[in-house]
Length: 96
Image (spheres, rainbow, N blue to C red):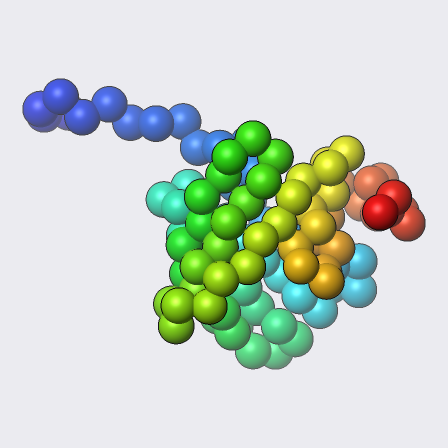
């Protein structure tokens, strides 16, 4: 590596998050971008995100903003409830 650039470890929230029915799939990428698919519509929403503690702020590529919070391993993103892909054991009725 050249220069004084130090790679950052990806945030623990990086990865694929899905609704229990699998219709909505939101991938949080390690570069601070996200890509959300809805049904058969790939990349339905794309944009950037920042994480502060358990809170996520989203800005999509059109300028629309949204928020999310991770509680007990579940991502509450506006009206959506998403679970980390592969953690099916956590797919239960979330506590509000």
